[in-house]
Image (cartoon, rainbow, N blue to C red):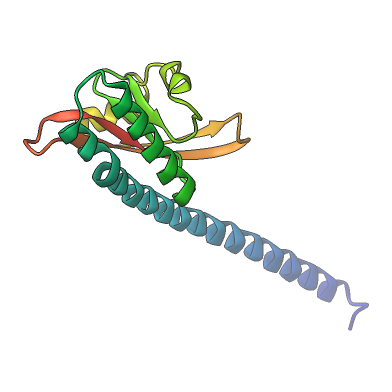
Length: 165
């Protein structure tokens, strides 16, 4: 039976068909798994941004006076603590694109040297439409990074800026 040419041809064809089917199945499963992980990560970032808004941004807006270094330091410490505890990077940005606090910066002076975030796609989308999601490759981390930015409004509904995680 193994010596039959016809049998070897059918056996080879079925073996190739099975291997190709397994490869296709693996690719489809991997894509679905990746999509599910991205959705879970986006939801985690959405919850993190809600936490940032409730814990750090709103109290600052309600109790602070513009230009007060003490209040800026307090916000920076709060954002750093949130980032450390949640292992999520947080950035607080004004409507004008100025970065007020960033959990990855050690001191407030380093935050002040950060680039203007007004034209960053995630921040711009948050200020214009309420939420912005951006996935990009990060050279520093050597891989893809997912950002979610949400608008920050005061009690009257006035737009104050964006929180990004």
